[in-house]
Image 1 (tube, rainbow, N blue to C red):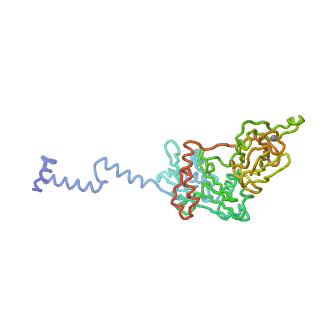
Image 2 (cartoon, rainbow, N blue to C red; image 1 turned 90 degrees about the vertical axis):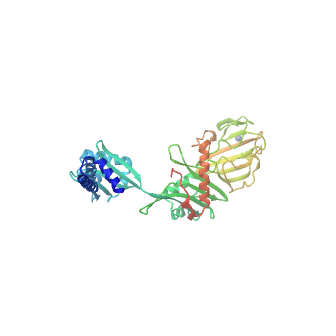
Length: 427
Ligand SMILES: [Zn+2]
């Protein structure tokens, strides 16, 4: 039965051939299909030939820059023309910082075995594999980041004698310490204002590469606990992808001064170096801004700082003076009362209530006499250019809040739990 169907099958194919010849043809076909190089069919022959062609005609060599050699010299040593080497160097320079190439940089060259032409140049630099391939249109380059695992590093610092020294001991780079200082500069001066017991927590993303080296990224989030208050900063990218830092409410840090120290009805007197005194008519400088507002209106701090003075002082009546970071200070006078906790040395955050509008001291009616100074010299608060009064809003703010939840969890967590957290794509 089986034999009969096989015979029918061959009978169909080799109709007209004697059965012996048909069997011989089957055997020959079998041999050809096992040994493709012997197969007379054109299609199979070309496939087999291309295979041996690629393995035979390319040669991979590993080379290093020699003494006093640079890539340009090396490429010429391997036969590249001046113009081709120049084009390649220019294209490489667009991808990697050429100056950071080590003196003994290693390269893989793929050479054409027959004419010794360089077909491909490969090297690893700055955590990337750079591959340049010779094409008909010139050199074509691509760059791929090496495989790595992203981890978060939580650094916890306790304020000691010197913030920068303990931060450096904890492994923060000079740039990271400067970034921390700058970010919190409107809140407090990390170099001067930290006292024993204050703490700084910083989250630094790290990339761990297969070869064991670690590259630290930009600070992702930080918290400063000082004088019983807590200040946070969270990284969030701007339109161009550059990281900026925002406080817990999405206000840009370092924080700009608030636009006014209260909700006022009108400005009754501006900063004026020659104003007639309302009582005597004598021209006297009014190096302040008077905000008219009803008795009892809450007065708030225009920026974070420390209470330098809180109490009674001559014509100012009941007043508060705040010292801010960066050499700025602010004075709030003619107050009817002080807010709770406002005493010399107390830390105040921007927007905190410090007292209420009144007419103590030399005041003709309830108003806030507000002075603003830089390094002790009174300046016009209303004309101070306040950099980047940006706050996140809308969808950006929502995205920021979602990221913030993660960072707050990280800041609360123990270091060994950190590896499980996923980094946002901009790190
Ligand atoms: Zn005044």
